[in-house]
Amino acid sequence: MNNLFKTCVWLGLAGMLLTTARAEEHPAPAGKPAKKGSIAANPYLGAIVVDAATGKVLFEDKADAKGYPASTLKLMDLLIILEKIEQKQLTLQDPVKVSAKASHIGGSRVWLAEKETFSLDDMLYALTVQSANDVAVALAEKVAGSTEAFVELMNKRAQELGMTSTIIHSVHGLPPGVGQEHDVTTARDFALLCRELLKHKDILRYTATRERAFRPNDPKHMVMMRNHDHLLGAVDGVDGLKTGYFSEAGYSIAITAQRNGQRVIAMILGSTDRKVRDAKAAELVAKGFLALPAPAQPAAPVKAPTAGHS
Image (tube, rainbow, N blue to C red; front, side, top):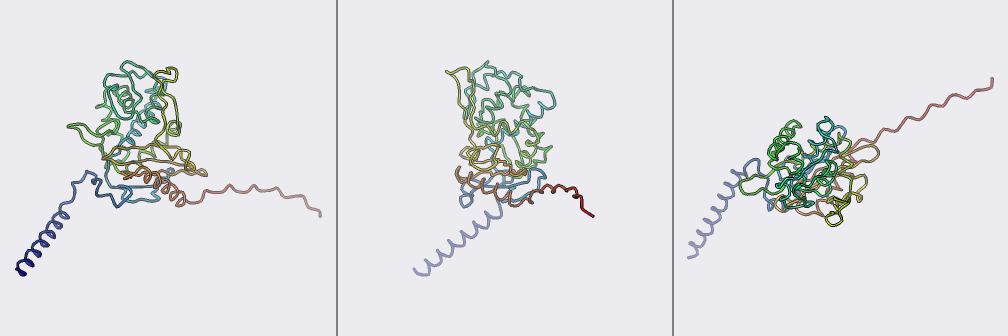
């Protein structure tokens, strides 16, 4: 009986070792982010900090790990629209009419009603401050005629920027419905997007806004929008950019800050907790500024020689 027991134990151990070996030989398919359970020991899937001026990486940790961007994806909406404004294809005063499709989008929203019309400027504030999914759809339809056509623009722009690990399927970053696929990106790819965005002067006007009324002249339907970025006003120099969350994606944030004429960009993808995400983002911003060379000091003015006595 004792020998039989030992044999069973050894067979069990051998089976466990074989299973482990097979799991290591066949990792998760490329292109899919790790499941939440696999990052339990880490505060995020991936992170990076770059110098906004040069693009130099100041710190990175698993920056190429793939995850779901959630609402940080709306930064690509912003980039495409701001570029079209600068190309004179759109103006901030252009009317954006709400379709039935846009009015039925859930999640974070400003409760758009079909046939309502708002200026492009008002809609960009709602997209950024409220992270309104219904607005993302209305804007996509305004710019490209349909959300599908706008997604094509998003993927084309991502490839142009070198975001080679990014695949976009939606205009808002919501979890996919039946038959749909997740949006996928990396911290490194998103830093490229953020750096490009910061070339546009209007971006910080939207992303630094902490509170703004939508429909201010309609008290019955007014929405007081409040920015989801809790680091605005809490961390020195932070003036953007965007947060994102849904349960499977975790908590993400793209953040930028300026101090003493220098600017850094940080991205945290797929954090397990909002407070952890925010604390790590603040920590990364501090690391970024410490890694930057000291700002050049202006040269002291040359004084004219005083007349001497011979």
